[in-house]
Picture 1 (tube, helix red, strand yellow):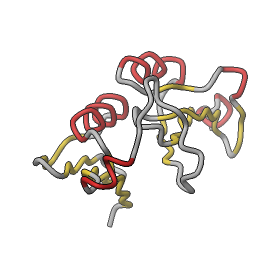
Picture 2 (cartoon, helix red, strand yellow):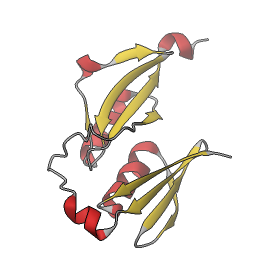
Picture 3 (spheres, helix red, strand yellow):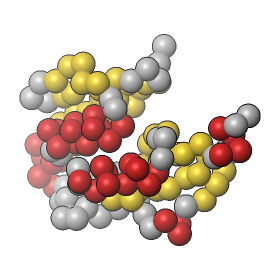
Picture 4 (cartoon, helix red, strand yellow):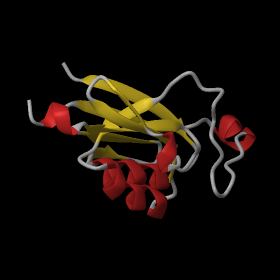
Length: 131
């Protein structure tokens, strides 16, 4: 069984494009209220938030970090620097390079998706890559 996560979103089409194009998920199902995205490692479901929740959720442009949500999705990428332009082009943001830190064999950098949900990019450190 793969790991799975669910995110309730305001703009299903935009969020589907963001996760598909930034992190290589394949869209295996999509309808007006939900999208199923999959990779070898896990599945991500994006579900349209109920109308009353969506109406009460303001998404700033550019999006503001939603730090009050106790969840952070982390994605391993080949290169944080190479992923940064994709995130920006698709409505996300990556924190400044000087905020990056190393832990457990990965260089890590936080950012946000187009709706302000906190995400983290992980790049395997050179030392880990050669062992």
